[in-house]
Length: 84
Length: 424
Image 1 (spheres, rainbow over the protein chains, first blue to last red):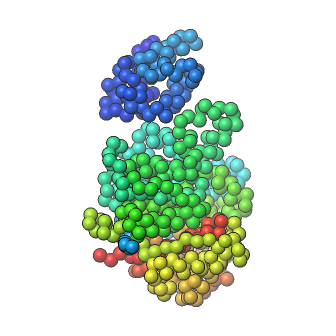
Image 2 (tube, rainbow over the protein chains, first blue to last red; image 1 turned 135 degrees about the horizontal axis):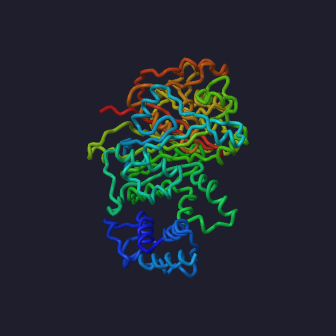
Image 3 (cartoon, rainbow over the protein chains, first blue to last red; image 1 turned 60 degrees about the vertical axis):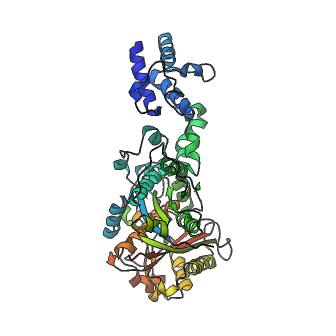
């Protein structure tokens, strides 16, 4: 899976959690909580769905800061999937 | 102290035999059973393999659902949300946007017996025991709360009054309506969404099955299984669903020209204290009679004014006891009793949801002038044979003015509400 494919797939995954009028405006620079208004309580669900969808393991202690910004999360998933 | 009159201005229903008020009215008129064979109960070797489970598949596409709400709702939450949204719209109100102002003058009291238990049984216990705690996700905590239904409804509608869940087993639904009545009567709220919701939980039903209080003799004929008042009644048929009613201050209802179904004249809840033959699972007859008399006292209604009783009547040995208690409380012989029917003959025993689903049935019968069939009692119980002519076995037209709704529950708890037809 190349980066564009991961990006498309990850954005589809987070859309139900996004609380903005135009979810199509999601950018790599968007912050999930501050810009996309994702309820921070639901962060753990995004992590679990990401694990399932990309068949990777995300460490809740060390990897969570990689999920603050959309582009960083996509890069993280790419690294993990390549590594796998 | 201000004493406000309390009226019903909206209703919503998710019942095993119909979803939606108009469909429910038709189902009641037709004597339609909502009891069906349940393959899972058969597979798990239940004695009783029939139950009443609402079909909400057509309602999951409604615009108020978003992916997050749908994913984070268990069955009792879904039933309560659908019934509450229907009730809200039926009351002539617009669904608020998620970013609307809080509605400080509306409350919600949504009762249950086992709200959240489906999430506990189907998700939490299996995942925890498999050492997969992190896989529970963020919303399990919201779904295992007994108050999961009132919480999700309050959030969707932006309610700013008390948003709470009462739990008194199978008395919960009627008790919620009575509690809401007092809230409005005393001027503490203008409107209260009141009712109850019960999950379709195999685990709750298993406990009833283990007690041997469920019907085991009708697995091959589900529609004949719920048999209140019958000589061959062999136990209750478990079911699930929700009934929600909008109770409103009469002045508020009239000011906004709301349609009024009925008036809540009063109600009363008590317990028999598990004395005098009462126990955790049986009623003290004196408790029931006091509850009826006190409800009539609050409603300023004389026993002879009652035209119709929507009984608790579960299809167990308690039916004849209930009828004798009602007869004694109203000081009317069995032959002199008002019309009596058992909505449970059509929808099974909705446990915590029973009182509200049956109250919606009561309102519809008052408003539309009929008494629905109490089915499956063609072999009427011989101990109360004199009552038989007062229990319609086919739907009949009847212009009842005042109705009594009774609900009783484990813990020897009782709730009785008195409703009056509304004539413009």
